[in-house]
Length: 231
Ligand code: OAD
Image (cartoon, rainbow, N blue to C red; front, side, top):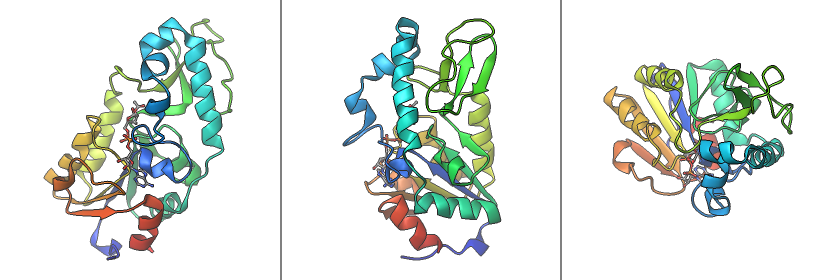
């Protein structure tokens, strides 16, 4: 497998999805063992569900927070973090688990929000880093605190999407890892990178739906492939 010559690139973007965290033990959303096979998103991951039964939705997210804390960054995360600290690298992720940050990438563009933040409709966003939620209701106004995550039916945060587009616009190497490519606008990001003449690589054990966009498709797992192409 050909190694990537870093000296050829001024700015690298890693765009990661659930497959990036799979080898850490975090289940993906679709496919075998996917979260949406076990849990009906209409009961656990949409605003209507939260309005109907906030305790049930918060219980579900508490289970996810505890599960994620038992998962650790793998070799692939370490390689990205290592590059992040010595090259011009940005990380954009659909993942809400915070594992890139735990591996050492400080500033990650989190397209779908974070399991580690909550949002009050009046007082805005706050961090909440313990396994169990510190408060389920806002201490100031008593409103329920909802996880600061993009659920089904939610709009993505426009500032975050714009930041992702700005970062992609100036990259010359775009590496897509572990994304099924069915959720927009993220599915349009590789096209945007290509339009800006970046070299586009996709790493995934399965053939992606948008395979024709990529200059190179490397079939395999993130934790196996990243050490081979970067070390
Ligand atoms: P999906 O679960 O839809 O797809 C996971 C992708 O990772 C698939 O293409 C797998 O083939 C691939 N994969 C599995 N194991 C891998 C590995 N070890 N290395 C590399 N790739 C691997 O996940 P996403 O595309 O991230 O949204 O899902 C997008 C969004 O759908 C999620 O952010 C979530 C979900 O509903 C929200 O919660 C809003």
